[in-house]
Image (tube, rainbow, N blue to C red; front, side, top):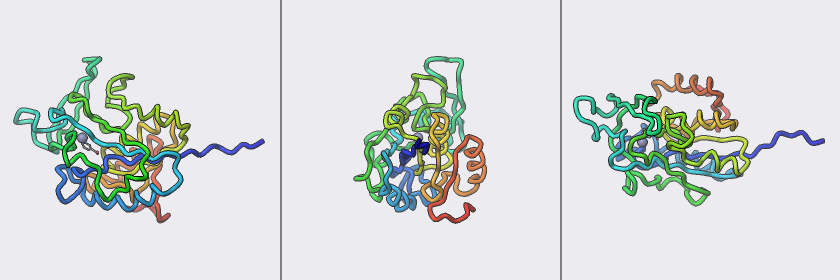
Length: 228
Ligand code: VGL
Ligand code: ZN
């Protein structure tokens, strides 16, 4: 009897958009554009499906500091409270950012260095003005309806077993997408060279430790020891 475990991998390319890249991105991740050649190499491998995500906010999005009154409206350092629209007693505190990835603007475009011809699908997220959504699967509330992208269903329909995550930013959308992928039951792996952090290298080790606790594995494309 054959007893091989099945291996049906998917590649998730998270938020490789102009606003997350130098030199002009409003929320540029240091060295963010450098993930493109690594991701293009991965895109040519035999994944069952290759899906890009786009942060896709309306102008009035709650994560934009510009939509909040002073004094608590400083990008990067101020926070806001957001409420589950279906359960007002469920709230989370979330960081405020410069305006970024506004639907239909140049900043929301995928970067031209990315080989989009190899993508099977693009999933947009973060459209609800009242909900922050780092994970490409769902918003921060444990709610079966609020801010669900449908990504889990797409992967399950494709009988995906393993999810490889790359893109921007390691400490926000890559992290929460990977954590949700693991929670959905996929064996989840982040490719080290395919991601960069908004916070730079400072908290990198903390993020990796948190991911490990959630069952997410880090791998390196060149097989060298992961020391960053
Ligand atoms: C992201 C901050 C705000 C990300 C998105 O893609 O990591 N970070 N929105
Ligand atoms: Zn965003």
